[in-house]
Structure formats: C-alpha cells, structure tokens
Amino acid sequence: MDTLTGVLNHAMIQAHLREQLSLFAVYPVPFAVLSIAIDDLAKLRERFGQAAVDAATRVVAQTMRMD
Image (cartoon, rainbow, N blue to C red; front, side):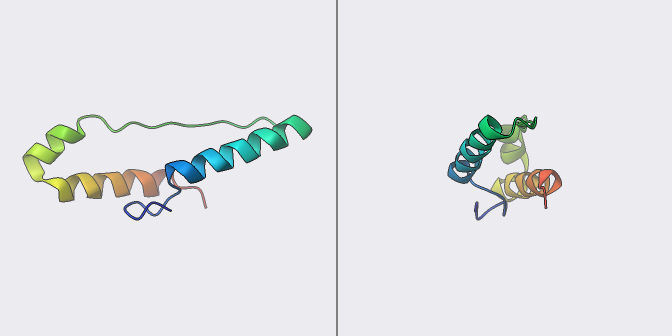
C-alpha cells in the first residue's frame, strides 16, 4: 500500500492487473483500467507547499478508491 494515499502502490496495481488479465483469458468478462493525472502539482507545491500536494493527492486517491 502507498503510505501517503492508503491505496495500492504501483507494484500492487501491476500485480492486480496481471491477475485480472489472466482471469480474462479464462472468463472473458469485460473490465476497465482508469488512469488519472493531477495537473499542475508543481504550481500547487510552489504556492502552498508539499503538504498541499500531499493533501490533494490523498483526496484524489480516496475519491477514486474502490472498496
């Protein structure tokens, strides 16, 4: 898990995707992959500091989190 956001880190996402692709070969149930980029984090950091970037990243991650 990513310590900042509390969601899966890159390595776990890749492992999960590999697992889902293997299952798809056996059970062809459609699924989707969503990728999100947060624009202008450098500007946010310049103006408000790293804590603001961390907070924004956490909010986006928790918003997109699937439970």
